[in-house]
Image (cartoon, rainbow, N blue to C red; front, side, top):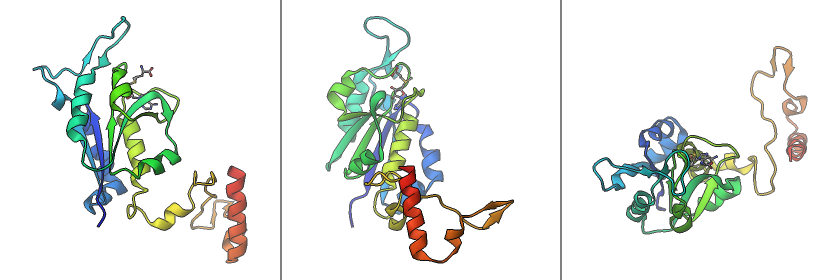
Length: 218
Ligand code: SAM
């Protein structure tokens, strides 16, 4: 049996992670031992009695910046024996895509570092993380949602997490197609009709229609 894929989410709000995971298909995948998603409290890697994770920025300016040392120690402790990729969540990082999800799904372990406040001491990106990823051109209050978004997109590509067939014709596949529109029963709701071709039973016509729709979305 292949090793289960590990996702480590390092955050000062570890309690935000489990509710989403447990309520989703990823919870089942964890129970089936296909993946393991763990949230870790960054404060476990602080040394002082106040468990300080932030400090004022060098050069002045508003707000607080997260310190390098707790992240460094966390990664040191969490890094496993197999292949690991360390990702720092950052609004100014490269935008995460489906291609990144596929690429990252090849690693045995992913460690996500979540910022808060004004962000993280840049040395984390320079010396600890392998890459900095953003989930879009907007600024969130923390890296937990980005880490969860990326974990979700990557974990569903792990064999067995969802039906292989569902992954075959999805949006953002290798050819860059988007998925064709999907419909289910009833065929008429109010006066909103399902496209007739889908009710025809003619598989060739249905296939052609879907291909055309995917290309139109391209
Ligand atoms: N001062 C930073 C800037 O202007 O880019 C924003 C810091 S943000 C308030 C705090 C943390 O949220 C960041 O360190 C990062 O971990 C996370 N974050 C916010 N927006 C993000 C995004 N679009 N993608 C990934 N992470 C994000």
